[in-house]
Amino acid sequence: RHELGSRVLRAPLVPAIVRPCPKHLWYAVVFPELMEPQRPEHPAASTLQRLCLCAQQFTSLVSIEMPNALLLEIKGSVQLFGSLTALHAALEAAWGRLSLRTHAATAPTTLAALWLARSGKPACIEDSGLLAGGLAELPIACTSWDPAWLQTLRAMGVTRVGELLRLPRAGISRR
Image 1 (tube, rainbow, N blue to C red):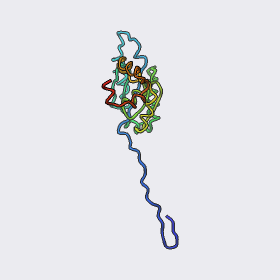
Image 2: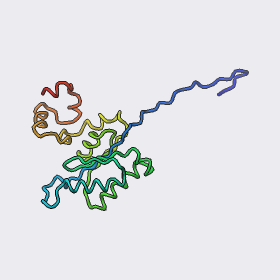
Image 3: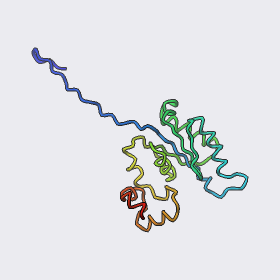
Image 4: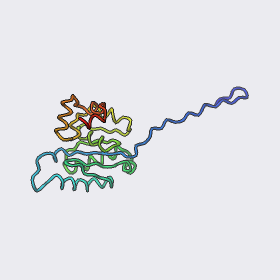
């Protein structure tokens, strides 16, 4: 607000640009050792069930993703732990106490979080608008789709998720 003589000039009201907050935020954790051949007395499914119980100290919504991963909905837990960084540190400490090697990632969708975690590169994407760019360079193997499907995609020249995203969706199911 500025005064010039008897006139008062007010700055125009500019609406704040607010990015929509994702409804969900997913944390995926992959346990590479569970892909290795298991002894009959320690099948991967029972191990994942025990890990699922451990993960419930962070959120009540935990899902097992066979053969070696968990998905946790952590949107509410971020507030409980104070920040996403603090929550990630607590999760990493929990897996560390169990002497487990992990790959983890956070994203607004389950598949994105899972594919990022399976890629082995730590990632934290909170904004849905950044998902396509974050997934683009991932190898299609991180999808864990049927090997025959992956081979068909490779034969078409598709080796990265970004290349897959550029294909027309209707044509993919036909191919």
